[in-house]
Length: 115
Length: 114
Image 1 (cartoon, rainbow over the protein chains, first blue to last red):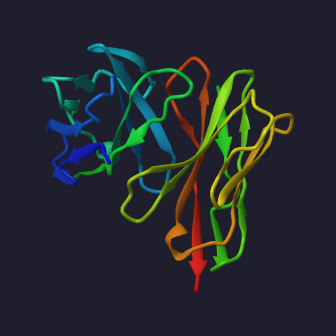
Image 2: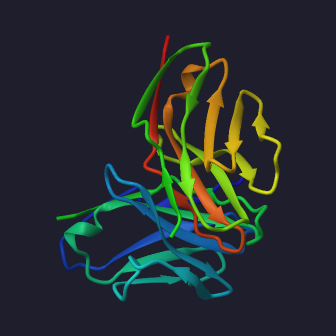
């Protein structure tokens, strides 16, 4: 069964460094999402992406964050200058369409630790 | 803004028994969708069941069923004949009809005892 994959599974970085989290959505999916889950807290929506554009973003998704689909398969989340509070599990998700019947399929997540 | 509340941080159930996980939500929208996702220790979130708000009939997927009370804004998940593999964190989630953003509750840890 097709699945969303994410790399790396764990990343440790120093505060102020840039990180890029990578995701490979399911191949025929057109809509892509990033969510994050700070330890012990809710899963929070960051951004949705379609047709090479951001379609929706949350207040969390400020100028430090960017997303890109650099090629036909990868979908990346870049954090320009990491802060301690960026430590979280980051989940990528994808869906075939945007209609109400669509299901978002989640990847296994990348655990980011900022020191 | 829409909110989702799961008031049970943790629940336990004996293998083969039935357990109900609670979820309430707040919205002014009339068109929306509700979901239960399971997050096992591997941390990959898996869709368990979904409910369209316009449907009065409660969704059912094998051993999983929901009790959707639209007026009360309640969406509970019932797991029948619980199995050890059901042990996981369960998230209730909301999505409005015309958007893609999922709004999650805080989650309920389900422990299954053998």
